[in-house]
Image (cartoon, rainbow, N blue to C red; front, side):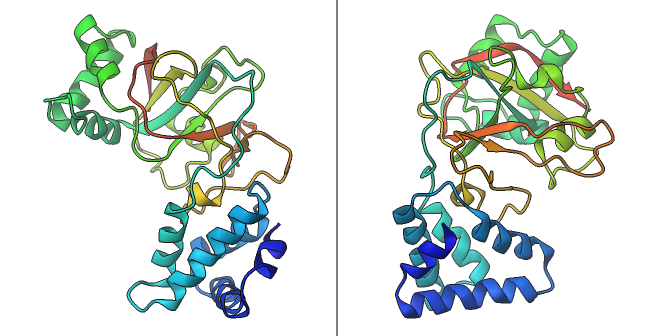
Length: 268
């Protein structure tokens, strides 16, 4: 698909894209070598969408105000949610693993919330100490607050579609970051494991197969090589001593926590 999209560009745009990808291929930064490889490996975008993404990238490269790396990120932001929408039946439960401080900040910055990030983090830790079950007040706060920002990545269990994807992964930071391929997550990070329903009022709709458009500069993303698949797949981090399998993943737009399910868990 990449070759077809590249061949659909104008001669000048094609040269610009090829030149920059070659520069990343031979450059010193492994992150951008991986991004270049992901661009070439993408099979989930329709030809018109892939061509539009590469055209936007080439246009960014022609400018003089941003770096090639920033230009790629800018182009990706204009070409998100272009992967196919997942058809029914949908997995009923989705999951996200978020650094506890990051989730506390998201809650605090939600329009209807008046708590500081520190207060939100303490609330999450209190919920954890209460076996993951929030009080009615805490439940209202979590349901009214944002569940994530911008592009939300969600995992699910393809075998047990009515269960949390974390029900069959050891609830440790090492196991969760390994299974989900969270290469930028420090090994010492405390993660909060969030599960929410894909149906009902406030649920994400639609769920999209992730592409390089959502991944942007995130080099730990791996395009699913199966062009016919309805979802992405994580690539577990090495050394993966538990032999954890790739986890199906989707992306969707920002939502609040209306469909959160409990208990909440911490991975440490």
